[in-house]
Length: 306
Ligand SMILES: Nc1ncnc2c1ncn2[C@@H]1O[C@H](COP(=O)(O)OP(=O)(O)OP(=O)(O)O)[C@@H](O)[C@H]1O
Ligand SMILES: [Mg+2]
Figure 1 (spheres, helix red, strand yellow):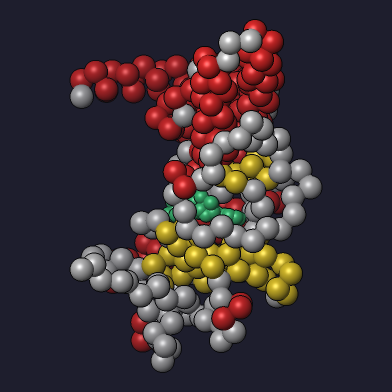
Figure 2 (figure 1 turned 30 degrees about the horizontal axis):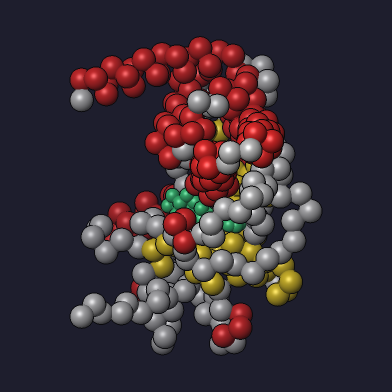
């Protein structure tokens, strides 16, 4: 029989007595847990990112690394907000000063929490989900096409796929533009995947959070394509760094390109749209794209050697 694990404990001051105010766990990765909570007033949603301590690491080293990562993330994001790059605003942070195991509450509330970041809540979806939904929708349309015999119906679904392709290209171009804006400030992301990009729809309203769920559980795509318009917001700066080197910027783009190749096979062919958006975003971008060619060559050589 499998043992049911107790829910992970929250750091103070998020150990509210009122269950209605308890933060909702949305994502649990190896490095961090993401909750939806609120800031000052229950009408202001906020995202809480908690970094648990790692029991397998030496405690002093672990605290130091966790602290470094939280501070780095908060500092980068604060700078990016000032420079007008689309990232969530930072509302509060604790890089470990209140989460010492010796100050653990009676309820064990601070146990295993290395520190946390509270940030602006971004309404919308991660790009990985948006692109996956779009790819699934295209597949459904293609199947419909095969089944339909009447030529008129056939051209209707072909047309709607073509229309939505234009929209996904525009979305990819926006992604390139957002990455370019980031690089222009002298910061690289360090972990550019489609899970670390969010699409905030225009006129977004605050919705109830979806609980932890797998992509496979999402509803079957209907006849309508998923919404592809909105603003791209960059998230997850735990591995970000300061650099203006073309090489570092090109590696950031290469990581994103590989992420598209492995997670979104149908969209991989459209990746040049990301690079077009990037090329237009700042003065030094074309140099970075040249460097990207070299980085790709090295990547190919490495995968050939194994
Ligand atoms: N500000 C935010 N608003 C809404 N949702 C968010 C926000 N930040 C993160 N999320 C959601 O939480 C998920 C996990 O967040 P994030 O990518 O920062 O953590 P992580 O990948 O576990 O962290 P790390 O790689 O730094 O260890 C995201 O994919 C996104 O769905
Ligand atoms: Mg992430």
